[in-house]
Image (cartoon, rainbow, N blue to C red; front, top):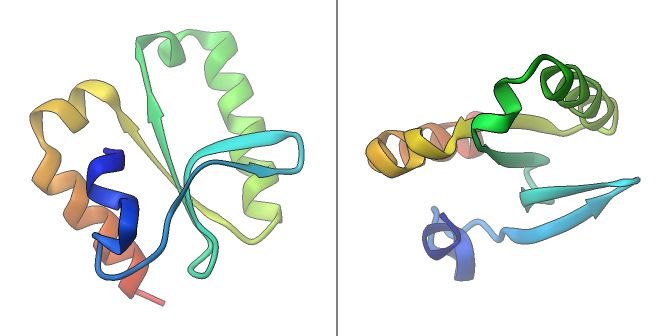
Length: 93
């Protein structure tokens, strides 16, 4: 995913990798558009991880960020669709 987001490759928007917001680190963050991209592995389907992810997303939303979550498998099999969703979120504001 980083290869498609780095160096303003996604609609000329700048992303940071492992960007700190409070006590959390966002996988990918476009600060200017207040957009966070999170990639989740299968462990995030566990009830405790879902709960933690919900708290994390709520905190990030309170900080003014929109959070998009994608499964790793989704990125691997539907990359173009994932990138289109990201671009739409970036340009929707």
